[in-house]
Length: 217
Image (cartoon, rainbow, N blue to C red; front, top):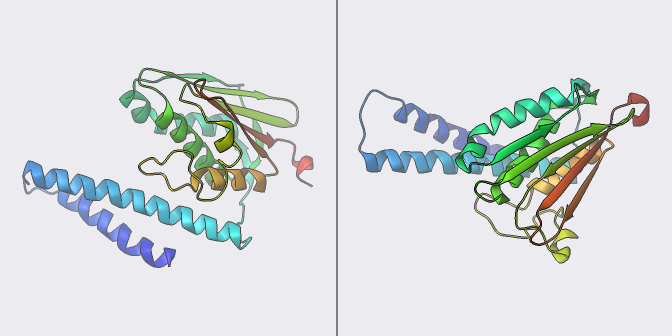
């Protein structure tokens, strides 16, 4: 079903981009409508991709394509990708990284994890706030913490926040799948996701990933 949905959604998105980028002028109202169609189609494509991942996880069909990867370089690419979202809310990003951090990882899957967690942090951060990405490592493990100044999560919700389809707060564009899938992808890398939060004091999400290939066996 998800595969069948993805094809027409991609087509709708493509034609919307073609019309918006064409030579023919359209009215402001039409442009607004096309913009909404485009953004909502992108959101639907994202949901379909999450459902595909969810199905693979449920059926234990998720395959990782590991290769040597510098986690620091990947994180920098992701934060650059989210630069506009940060600027829109005037959020100051503080990045504290080692020079490099090499391990055997699936780059696309970890990029998906970092994008999801950072997007969540931006979404719940206050205007003009600060978002910190702190990266430390031991000889065998990388510890990546994403620290926001958002409203925090109550203990009641914190216990269930990584369950499939669970939402502590119903927000536009959220499916209740992102955190659950991120947790599964990290655990597929033999890692761990830890979420610490207190109402009124923000949230810290920490990813632990093994760097030493011998730790994978």
